[in-house]
Image (cartoon, rainbow, N blue to C red; front, side, top):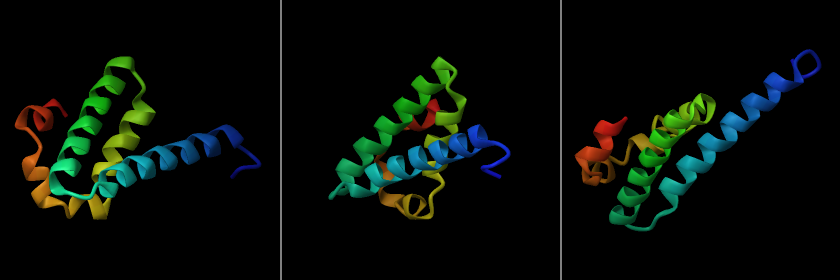
Length: 88
């Protein structure tokens, strides 16, 4: 695939990088409160990306929320303000 379409391969690599960095940021916080703040900031980032029309990075950030390790953080997600959650 890289031989025939190097730009698509780079786009996929960039997507995976942004998704893993976003999930890593959320998971790296030590307390539930810190994770909730970072989660809310990532939602704000997603809103800004949507406004800018950067849909590839937007989907990468949203994809990080679907990461299995991030999805298991139910107590963290419960502490994220409803205003932030509804922004998505």
